[in-house]
Image (cartoon, rainbow, N blue to C red; front, side, top):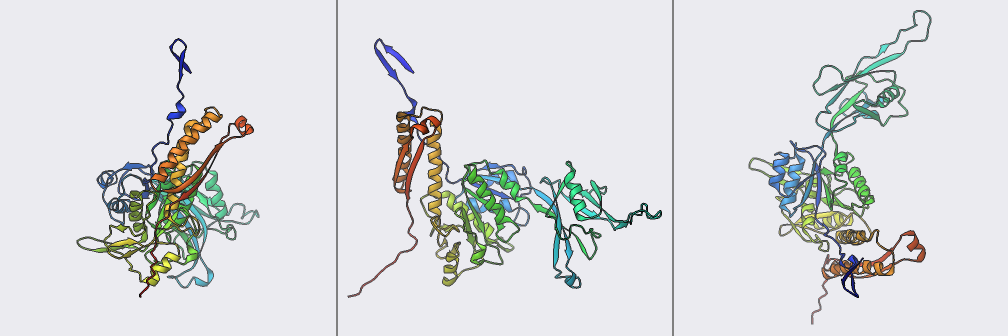
Length: 472
């Protein structure tokens, strides 16, 4: 809009020249774990260990994985953390003994038939399940009616209550699953019905033929879901490793989900105490996943405790969050008390070949090579972080232009904004160079589309130095 200053003199101010990329976070950590107190499945923004203790209480790895992991994050340079205390969800799976193993009570192989799981997570979901003895339905049997039918009653108890919360009288596992899922206000849902055994009847819960087994299950997927909309760059499951039930699957699902909703991030998870070097086939090739090994040792005045690589993941996340996106974690030191395994050179080589971020004891505790589990272009962590930074920057640069005119002048201003952002990445040595074009055909102008095409050349770190010596 023109503003008259003097007769015959007009000034038009166009805001496009003032648009620049906004601030981009690179080191925000999201973490999910158990704690002795605090809100359930709600992200809490904390910036120090003291704040964390006030919010989530004290604890140790046996009952408060969140606090143990947070201590490692802050010791290793972490600053901004979105912490989620995960709730607990009761889950019971009916396991029936296989015929050829009924005598081997200790090592009995079982087949799962049906899983019953609380619909919501939280401290109140401490459900217990009891199954009565099978009984005969004698209706019409004395008068020549239909044959009698075996039935059992499945009762649900909440917490320590002695009176059942829900009760179902059923003739088969399929009948039980249907009755539960048809009841909208039921506390539980039924899933994973075994098609082969669906028409069988649940024996008594404490019988030798089979029983519902389970109890409180830590609901990490719900905790991860609470982090989806936060601006998080690195995500960790406190104390969880790839051998724990469905933890790797939950983390990978979260990484895919957040990438689809424009909340890209990297996940860090560790190996188990029992298996420092898992087979290569067990390690998924994922550009947003970092697998760390080995486990770590923690020491107190009265004991030494070995912890899985799930806690090393927290320390690595702290280091990553403190580094610019273009700085590799290779050869960086970690603040640790010890490692559960000190690999020899052959084992270190195998770990790197298996695409694992490995820590060795060498002038402190050092990261051997900063890599993801990807086996191609995204192998280096820095490449993934640089491109994610560019993605966030391009969005931040282009979003203010949404709704403005789709003409040459505005597109030139958009290109200047993007040029400014990418030039800063070159100056900061995140990029070697780039090529950029902003254009639109007449048909694209009519459709409201503008095409931004760019080629980025990210920097790479020095992972090893090859020396050739000549003597004369």
